[in-house]
Length: 546
Image (tube, rainbow, N blue to C red; front, side, top):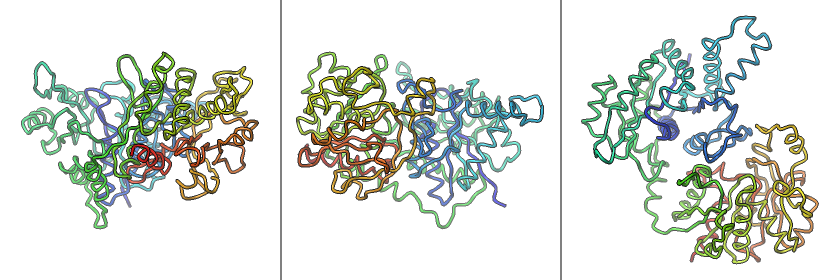
C-alpha cells in the first residue's frame, strides 16, 4: 500500500522571506525526480477566503478555476508546477473553524465537547489528506503561513507534530529563516535563526532542513554554527541568497541537493522515468541571454502604501508580461504609474515614452479619471493598450465619452445617476450587494467564451472557443452594445449565450492593439506556457518600439 509523504514548510524570524517560492520550488524539484506532488497553502487568518482583503495590505487575490479566491502564493504554485490547482489545495483557519462549528451545530460530533484538539487538528489533517487523494499525489508539500510564535498558526504546526508522531518516516519539516546582515555590523547574524529553531522545538517539531534566506549566500562557518546549535546537519542548511529571478530558485536549491536530501529523509528513491529540470533550466538560461527590452507602463491605483511601492497587488500581471516578453526574445521593462497623478495635474503626454500601456483590474473610484485619461492617450496616439477587467470597462467608458460624445458616460459602480450607464452591475450581483453579501459572491472562476473569426483576439488564441477566469460584479450594458459597435469598438468575445461581453477591441486597421478583457488572463499565464493575449500585446509593443 502506498504511503503518503508530507513536507511542511514553516517560517522563522520574519514573514515575506519566500516560503511560497520555497514550497513551489520544492514541488518543482520533486516532480522533476518523477514524483507526483500536490502543493497546499495554509493561511492562518480567520477569513474564509482571500476575497475580501485589501490588495495593498495582503497582495493579489488569486482566483482558481473553481472561483475560490485565494492567497497569491497559489499563483506561484500554479506557475512553478505549470498546472491548475483546486479548492482542496487551499486551507484557511476560517474554513476549518467554519466547517467544525457547522458540523457541531448539526450534531456531527454526537454531543461531544468540541475542542481545538483533536477536532480542529483532525479537520486540518482531513483537508490535507483530501487534497493528496484528489491529486493522486505521492508527496504533499504544505506551506504554513505566518512565522513561528504566531498564535494563529499554532494548531497547524500541532497538526504537523501529530502527523510526525503517527508516521515518523513520512513527514519532513523545512524551516525558511532569515539571516540578517545589519549595515552597521556588516556581518551575517545566525542567532535569530537559532532562536527560531528553538522555538519550533518547543512546539515538539524539529526541523529536518533550513532554507537560509539572506542578502548573500551563507558560508560554511555559519552553517556549522547553526548546525551545532540546532542539531540540523550542516548539509541540510541550504543557502538561499537574494537573486534576480525567483525562477532561479529551483536550480539554486538543486545545487545544494535539496531534492536528494528530501527523498533520503522521506525514504524515497528517484524514479528512472524522471523528466529532470532541463526545460526549466532552458527557460532560465534563455532569459539571461536577452539584451533587448520593451518598456511597458502599468497604470494602476494599488501601488502606493505610505512611502513604498507595492507591486504585489498585480503580481500575476507582472509575471504574465515577463513570460510573454521572454517568449519573444526580449525583457519587459515595467514601470508603475499611479493613475491618481494624472488627476493631480501630471502631464499625460509622459506616456508617450512607453511601447505599451496596460490598465489592470481594480475596484472603486480612486484614480479612475486618471486611468481614463491614460486609455484615451493610448487610443488616440496608437500606443498598444491592454485592459484587464476594470481596464476593459473603463476602455468602454472612454470610447463612449470621446468617440460617441456621451460626455457623462460611466460605470454605475461610480456614477449611479449617469445618463449613459455603459457599464452596469450584473442583475444577480445587485441583489447580493443590497444584502451586503460580499465574500465569494462575484462572478468568479472559469467560464467559456466564443471569439469572432478574424478578430485580434481570435488571431492571438488561434481558436474560437476559450475558457478564462473571472472576478467581477459589473459588465458592459447590453443596451449600448449595438451603438458602441456601430461606432467602431468591436465586442469580439462573448459568453456562449451572447449575454456578456468578454472582450472589446479595435480592429487592426484602426489601431495596432487596443484590446480589453472582462476576465483576468494573467491568472493562467505560466513561465513555460505564456498567455496568448499577453504575447500579442507584447508583440505589438515591440513593433511600436522599433
